[in-house]
Length: 245
Length: 245
DNA sequence: CGTGTCATTGATCTCAATCAATTGGCGTGG
DNA sequence: CCACGCCAATTGATTGAGATCAATGACACG
Picture (cartoon, protein in one colour):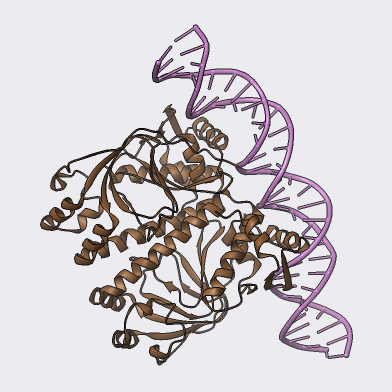
């Protein structure tokens, strides 16, 4: 079985002085939308901005969870490994997403940068304290946890019961929704991750992903102008193929 | 693919006057452990006790979420369906577990009684209001959501990457842990659910579950004194087979 | 005892995994 | 500029784990 894991780059993390949270372009998407301008200042006082290159590890499953993060730009992959190296990518994080749930004490999964990413980092302790002071933060966090839980249920349905075509179709539709949220095209979709990441996310192999893409392409449902860009030529057909409620 | 769903029984739900929450045997396991005796009284004022027979539906995916529940006794199965009837059981709930996460607005999944169950029911609105007043409730809820999220990640790993034997072994070990939590034997395990539920939980078919059990049995790893009771004769071996960290 | 439901067991099939090249893009260095 | 190496992705041939199809066995219940 598969282990499309990628050796982590050795490049260093840079940490610089905070940019202005009030001007943050993705604030409306993030956790930070929960609090008003005065309180955002308090968040800003706690934040450290960090950058990672593609392949770098942000946090490792089982390690004590010292930080939580907001994704400012770029994509992360979250994953768990089996002792023999088989990998399950449990999700991708995009700008506005929060990293640090399911991490009371220790991280429940590892996180790596897919490409270059910019993260807003908080010390778990500081963050926890702030949450206790700002009840809105806590309830927003609960909301996020609920969304993630619902997404996890959906992914279980996909992994347990869907066919390869259905998985790929569902994945693209999910990416299309994500694109809408980020005010990008719902039809032209960039795939920042490699085939191995997609395979490990969907419980397939690289080869099956590739073959399924070919079929969808030759059926005219999608186009692949580049290997990491999909065009949903026939979104309705794709929805049928995904077998969605 | 499989649809081991079961037609829902037609028997009526009974609702009676609340028992005493302060004397509740499983309070220490439940959400209710978050608040002190005086506040438990406030919880108790809001609770309705309801009973369901095996096969009855408690809530349906997509329906507006009007209630949240605590499981007082019995087992629930949570599941999602595909349009063609394929089913994924996303989890089982045992005494002390909370039903109502991933249910902002509408239920993210359906819930059915596996056998006879006793539930403590709250109106979502009342419950939400109480949570806003008792910050400890909110943070306990977040804690629960985090645990469920971690469990969901684990289940994704199982569904995406584990073999049939590994899935069954992991399932039994998980049940054993559950048993410890409920102060039952970690070796003799009752299976309140039928084979179809197990299959749909593990992303397998009934037949594969049955065959895998036979193999584990003939290998001396487990015993099956009755079809719905397992004895973990060799827990260490089982742990090896589960390929766990 | 029939009858229905659930679980087990056996025979066969199939979809995706595995194994094995081949292709294509890209950067490096001669 | 082109040859070479590297790596990701594609494509093809074959295998295999688990699904599907089909009985059979084991209880429980009216």
